[in-house]
Every structure is written in structure tokens, then in C-alpha cells.
Image (cartoon, rainbow, N blue to C red; front, side, top):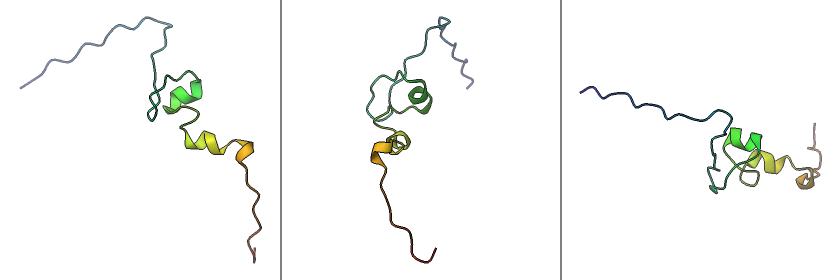
Length: 63
């Protein structure tokens, strides 16, 4: 059977769609967070990029 296509809902211009974090479901306001779909606290890439969490490491012998 052939089903009719669903009509798209009208969206007012200039009003951003609500986006929520995929993990904690909190509303996202930061443009990067909205693009990734994860909040600042839930995004593993953004958490490790913090210089406060940088760890000094010894050099590998033989290199």
C-alpha cells in the first residue's frame, strides 16, 4: 500500500529549534554543543581539551 507523505510543520523564521543533550537531556544553548548534540559536561572531546586536565608524561624510552 502506498502511504501519503507527511506534511512538514511550518517553522517561524529566526526561531531556533530546541535541542537537548543526547546523554543528560538538558537544553543546549552553545552553538558547538547544539551542532554535536552533546552538552559541555557530556561531550568527551570538550572535557579533555581543558588545559586544567593536562597531564605531564615521561618520554618513552628508545624514541
